[in-house]
Image (cartoon, rainbow, N blue to C red; front, side, top):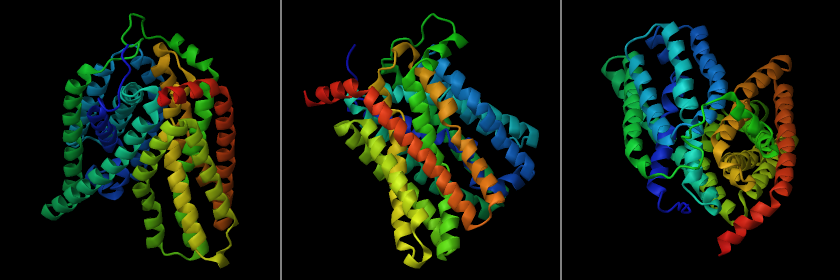
Length: 421
C-alpha cells in the first residue's frame, strides 16, 4: 500500500478541518447567544439546560458506537452524511420547533455530529499522513479549527447584528442558524467529491456485521487505557481553565474586562501552539511534545497557586499564557500519539470511539466538579481547591505519558529512523 503524503492531501485536510469546525457550530452556538436563543424559541432555562444534557448524555454512547461503525462503514459515506444531516437538522430548527422538539434535535446532533462524524474524521486525518507526519497533520487540523472558529464566529456575530437591526434578535438567531446550516451542507457535498480518492485503512467497510464484540479488542489494549488517561487529564484542564479568569479578578483586582480578554486570548494562542506542536512532534516524537505540554500545564498551575497578590498580576498573566500554549500543545497530540502504539488497522475506529467515550468525560465532569467545590468553599479557597484538583489530574496524566514513552520506545525510534531516511 502506498505511503500517504500530507503534501498531496493538504487541500483535503483543510476542507476536513473546516468541516470539523462547522459541524460543531449548530449543536453548541446557543451558549454564545443564550438569551436571544431562549427567547427566539420560547424556551425556559431548564429546557435550555436539557438541550445540553441531551447532547452530552447521547454523546457518550455516540462516540462509543461511532467508533465501531467507522470500522465497518466507509468514511466516504459517513462524513458527507454526517455533515448534510447535521445541516438538515439546522434547517428543521428554522421551522420554529417546540422546546421539546428542540431538545430532541440536540439529541439527534449527538448521532449526526458525534457518532457518524468525529471517529470517522479522526481516522481519516490519521490516514492522510505518514507515521512521521502525524504531528503536522493534527497540528494543521487543530490550529486550522482554531482559525476557522474565530472567523465563523465573527461572521455569525455580523449576521446577528445586521439582522437584529433589520427586525429583532430572534430574526438574528435564525440568520445564524441558516448560515451554519448552509455552510455545513455545502461542505458535506464538497466532502463527497474530495473523499473519493482516499485510500481507506484495512478493515473499513468489511463484511463483518457491526457488533459489540468489536469493543473487546481495544479494551484489552494497554495503549487504549493510557490514551484515555492522558486525554482525560489534559481535557480536565482545557475544560476548566475558564475559572482562572474569575480567580484573577477576585484575588488580584483585575477588571472583568481584562479577565474576559485573558480567557479569550487562548483562542489566539491555539493556532500557534497547535502548528508549533505539530512541527516539533514530527522532529522529536509526538508523545515527547505531550510530555512538554503537561510539564508546562503543571508549572503554570503551580505559579497561579503560589503567587501572592502582593506580587501583582504579571506572574499570573505569564502563567496563563504558559497554560494556554501548553494546553493546545497537548490537545493537538491527543490522537497524533496513536501511531506510536501500532493499533491494528481493523479496529482503529473502534479504539478511537472507545477512547473518546471515556477520555472526553471531563467535558461534562469538570464544570460539575468545579460547581460542587465552589458551592461548598465559596471565594478564593474554592478556586484554589479546584486548581489543586486540576494540578493532581495533570500530574497523573504526566505519569501516564512517561509510561507511554517507555512502552512505545521501539516504535518511536523506528518512526524517527524513517524520518532521517
